[in-house]
Length: 290
Length: 281
Image 1 (cartoon, each protein chain N blue to C red):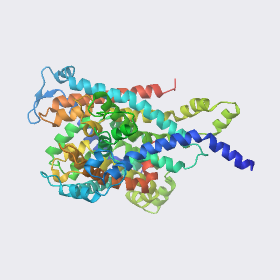
Image 2 (cartoon, helix red, strand yellow):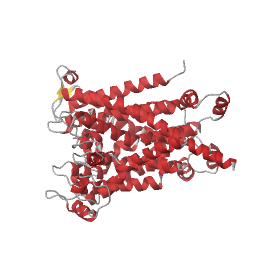
Image 3 (cartoon, rainbow over the protein chains, first blue to last red):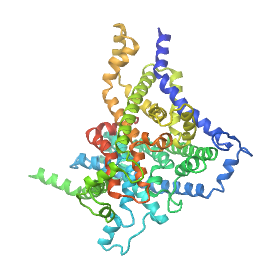
Image 4 (tube, rainbow over the protein chains, first blue to last red):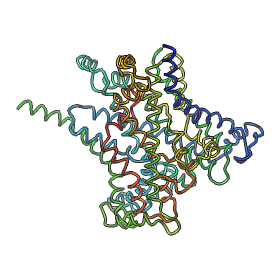
């Protein structure tokens, strides 16, 4: 009986598990093997030396640029976004605040539209003679149109700005959910002990929210390292490839012009390694059990 | 009287919070509001930053339907594809992942727990890394440009399995045993008892899966080679890739692409929020 029941359990979880092996793990191994090969998709052969695709990266200026860009987005956008999300969650968690539902809905709303959609909306907003320039001119802040998407630094700024717009509410929802599960008796005790707002936040809220914070950090890093839709649709990697992300470069290497699956696989394996390393660092830093 | 004054003092202290929240809410809503107005304006008005509704909406819609001189418009086929693909993916995903979450939680033993730990590792695999082998696989299986090619890689996800597993913790095992004594089969317990009890989890999972499927871009771009099978994100991205862009029509197309998900957001916001945070509990 017990044995039979166990077998039934396996039957329940078989399909999903098999699909994850077929559509995630197997392709990952396959990508690793392909990364040591060269040639077009029909007749690929081993590269000589076998790690040649990995050597090639160091001379690939577009790749180095895309790596720099991705990390620039990561270093600026993730902390700003998460701090904003935490601040908003703290403010919205105050029971005395009116219209909490309305504020929450508005701030969460950007998550309702697709990455392609918002990229195109921001592209139209920051267009050379677009809305943003028109408003800035009207208020006399600028005297001639800024080519937001035509200069490297402003184009990067627009991407970061757009990312913050799209994802702050998303992370706020995680923090709000976390704040609801907090143990409030500790706050009462801290208040009696005369702790101020900042102390309670730093010494009580943050430690209790630690698992949620780590989760949002890992998700944000993971997402930023895989940025694609924005790079393609907001700036198209431009001007001159200076805003291109790693995923965008990999897609172009694999599917645009002369397709090179071997080299693209090697590049994608680098993304995988980076995701894994950063996730492990995060879990280690977040783990306070000594 | 003093009670009122106390409330007044509390609200006064919250003024900075209100100001910050109002500004951030406006910042969040503005681009969407602007998309709505831009969809009703001419391309000249849009590019000059006109802020209010115009009367060019019908024209923009017509331009979108007729397409540019050199290609036929795919608006309706893209809308239809997006719906069919997203609904199919959602049905398969919640069925397969809930079966697995149920199996992992309610029949758990050490071997299954170990397997679950392995499956979670798949969360760390970037889409861009599996994209090339999956493309080769789908092309060998002749599944390019099909709903199967579109959804198969996204049907079973560790996130969804984990969400169903976490939420199954509260599922009353006593009911299962009682049903077994009554002679209900194991599969019968799942369909007749588990599914109705877990309604809210299914709703949250369905909302999030539908949204993800509707909004997907990288994988559909790789697998949907035939223009007749393209989805809305591909359609609007193609519109914006031309040399001369009709911004009014473009914003109209973005509106079409966003409307279904925005409607779902407003009706099922609670389920959506539960869906994205589903696995944190």
